[in-house]
Length: 154
Image 1 (spheres, one colour):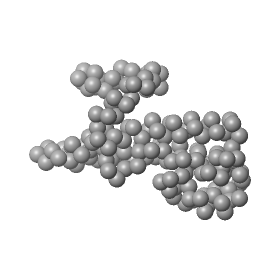
Image 2 (cartoon, helix red, strand yellow):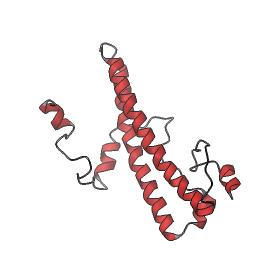
Image 3 (cartoon, helix red, strand yellow):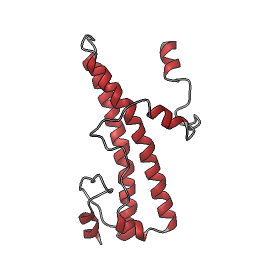
Image 4 (tube, helix red, strand yellow):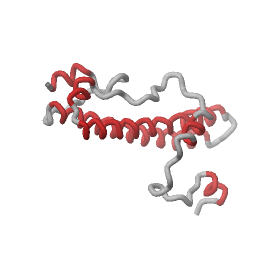
């Protein structure tokens, strides 16, 4: 059983999937408390232009919903990255390596979630043009996958 201070600080009494969403004002207020890391791309990638132009309205809505989910996920990285930075500055703490390992595991799980959402968007783009195409290429920062790979699927 967690200590009361932990339960209160992390709102452990709230249901993970049934807690009301933050308002449009609350989320930015939380994120703006933390500076962004200079080398981290927080904006979700755009849809592949060739696919975006061919998507039917339901596909476009689904892609925008998944992109919105990517945007929401990216906000988690701001406080998480600053927390890691703060922990790494505490040289006197004997548990620093253990804390950084836990934080790295959280970071890895969030990166996996973000990647899975990106794969869903890629799959939808593939199915718009060629339902049998699959790419193993790493995504670029400006779109969900390299344009050359996508065009090869056509």
